[in-house]
Length: 65
Image (cartoon, rainbow, N blue to C red; front, side, top):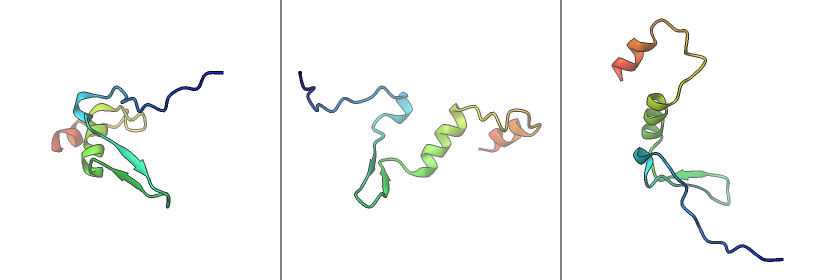
């Protein structure tokens, strides 16, 4: 049986999230290299929320941001 080396590969990410890292410490606390606000801004811009798809004021909300 061959053992795989424990080499840390960097995953492919969106260029806007280059350098993003998340860690969970021994107490279960999550730490990130980006602020929560920056992550939420990226998700709002790039991820379609199916719960909000049929809302009439969705475009107005995105324009305000």
